[in-house]
Length: 257
Image 1 (cartoon, rainbow, N blue to C red):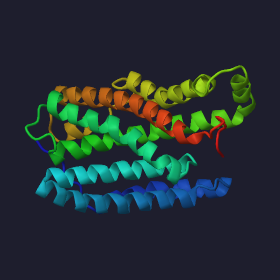
Image 2 (spheres, helix red, strand yellow):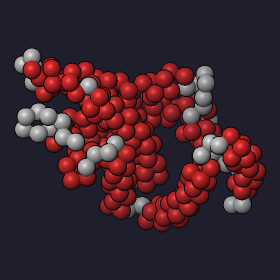
Image 3 (cartoon, helix red, strand yellow):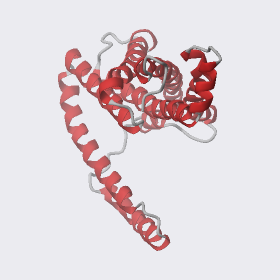
């Protein structure tokens, strides 16, 4: 049994539920309507364009094209993180790019080769969707972790300077906020992992079941992807913080504005 085909126009039915949301926000003075509508519109356009593009990528299924698309995804994630965290592209983009790229590429190739056992580890059907899930979670985690680290340093600049004054080196002086950044990055993922199956049925598992896979097969895939997300997210935030630190401080260990 395959997944039930949904006509292209039926998602428009959900607009009916947006009407009361817009009315309530307007009446209560909650200024989210423009952002909500823009976000939904942008999501729709992006997904439609990606859908058309991926059809051709899946058709050709060329390792170089597939990897090129993966690199484009990594660059987009790095740019989004740099922008959201208020970092400078000139100083921090390469650091964030490596923080995203290295853990996630290693993880996806390991999964395809040793866990799933594909003959072609660059097969677009597995390579691109799984990488999208890894990158999406690393993106949200990195934004939280990097923001927590640098905001903590800015808010506690005197405490940081005091630690330096007690002969601590840069690593020792920043360690409390470094640990806060890592914890802030991982906490939502750990909470989500703990409650899967009890509170939620995750998207990958649900999609496979809707596509006709047996529940136990879907569960095995979901365990693999959740463990991979947690691992890649952990190493990604460490690598991002370690690399961005190299250009975030001046010669006197003062945090640059």
